[in-house]
Length: 313
Image 1 (cartoon, rainbow, N blue to C red):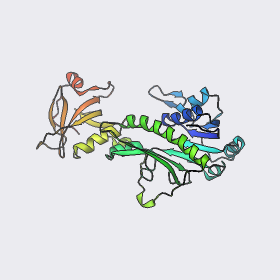
Image 2 (image 1 turned 60 degrees about the vertical axis):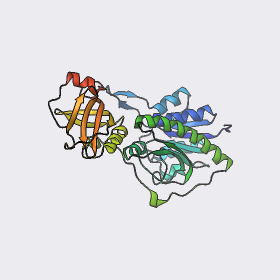
Image 3 (image 1 turned 90 degrees about the vertical axis):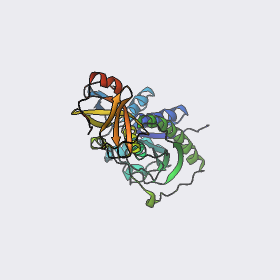
Image 4 (image 1 turned 30 degrees about the vertical axis):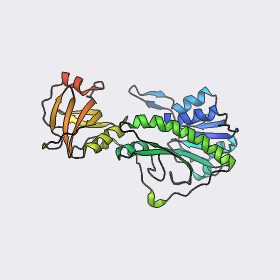
């Protein structure tokens, strides 16, 4: 797609945003500044590392700004001095105040990983899988003071695979979002896009995930449990208690077996995994991770951890 150069400020932080920034560079836009979250300790060693967006900006010699807050007169002055045509926001992680939203001549746009107005908020990808949705997508929108409530510009939809985890879907939607971003900028430039107000009656929310969501409720259906396990990856991960140990659960299969056992009861275990009763049948835990251990198949786990319990919690 042929794209004319536009002066853009990019605001984003994680890997999901990095792909959009790379796409902007690749088509020749002039990225006059990149805003990203301050450097923080990450991963097990808690070593201070740069965000994926900062790494891309460094490779392209772009000025980088990492303010603790955007509600600062100096930051507003910086944005004005950069004289951008457009601000692009992708998973930045900070609210953009109106003083900044009103600066660029062509406005401020955002790429959101859902089909708005569904799943406004921080965790749209995970909630779509947890709730058993079969379709999701990415939306470009003009930004407003209310988070994810701006006028819709363009939408790209995609089915959610039966086995797809949040990790898988993050990767696909980051690519789809980058493509949508370039299409949206071109449409804004050509004045071919008609902004559409969101219907407040259709709004749903996707709040931040918490560790409180991790324990598997075995009284739910097999389908609900499987969606939960897929949706809570890579964090906080679904968990269950096996022999008084909280075990992370990464993969489960739904069976066609019916059982009279109470939900949470172990139906069988062995090379096939650990079959557990739920409200409408059973599921088989295929992959898990014990505290301090490595992620492994349930069959391998059983070889070193003979079960002494008949029930999971």
